[in-house]
Length: 508
Image 1: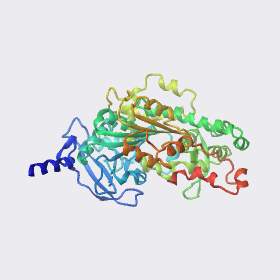
Image 2 (image 1 turned 60 degrees about the horizontal axis):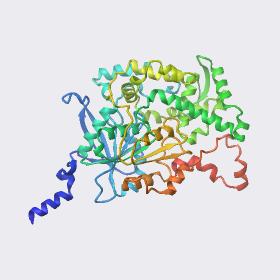
Image 3 (image 1 turned 90 degrees about the vertical axis):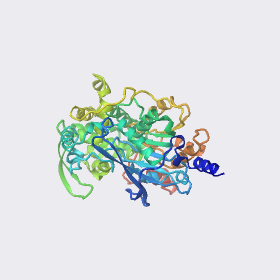
Image 4 (image 1 turned 180 degrees about the horizontal axis):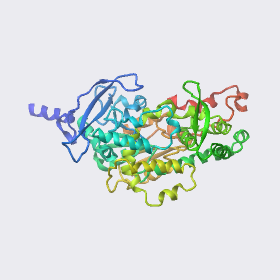
């Protein structure tokens, strides 16, 4: 009877007895706080070799935070959140993790900062620290050269901060946390990480959610410029199809051309109001800076709809709204993205796959060509790691996968998600025409994720929620600067429909 009791105990506590690959948790956790998270998390750090081929060499520290399940008996397969970028820290996605309330009824949510980001031995250097006029600097090469030299002087090998190293780190963290398997959620670049982890460790993945799908073959610093310009062209086409927009802005393309002509090839001095202080200052504005400032506005419908007005004002010499809308001015970019990690990843995995002549061929005719060439040129001075031979090959898997694509996404359009979905035996691809980059955190998305992860099936998901996304429509282009409401809304006496697109992020 004693022997039977021991056997049953071991079966029930498989994680402590080594059943099916599970191990006892070896990572010490303690209470900690994460940005914009009201409740405490359980956090710990794990040391791993910076260079996996030299275990005795320099170490890096990996930071993990767990938002515990709201039960005394959580399931042993948590959801791990894989951030985007490259260069975003998962700990900055804590507010999203906190919204996964249905999932957290039974499962932990795990946030692990990728090496080089957040609290995982971040690649910090003086050259990439935010500066007052960052928004007007469009060539990253000089600062990248300084940063590479500074990291080398510190004894940091920036070539070791790749997706492949990150995959090895994740597997080490899974073992240290004592999880047998886990479920993956990846957003944008995080979908590349999720797919590569699934390629290397298929038996450790129960389900995967891919939002803003980056197929393995995507060349980030090249392809995104083409899709961004396609997204801008879609705004132009939408305006031409809207009588109200055409009336206010007969030709958006002409406004952009007027800005280019007025600034000239070398830019010119203009007076702008600092959106943080209201003080007027004189700066040198270039056309490249205008294009760089427009790009982030295409990521979310709530800012995309402002583009006609912003361009019209800039064509008239008022660059204030463009400056105010740029994430670099608010500091959000500096907080969210580690530039050094971005270059370590793309210089190792993307730029080496650019065949001779491809840059000229694919960027021909793009207004952003010079911006793209400058970003790619950084890899001439940046320490370059390596990637496995099959890294860019399409992934085939029978693991259940739920995919999301925003119809207005400027960097990972729905075609990318459709391409990836073809190779997953058990998948569902949800396309939301009215949404931009990253869909699943909006509306009923968190509940849909919880349902999918709980059942590991794609054929029993909420039809109502899926319909909400699939029948969503882009918000109307903003053309009146709040001077008047559209006539239909004036007649109804309600502004609810007009406000809804702009409140989408904040609504459950």
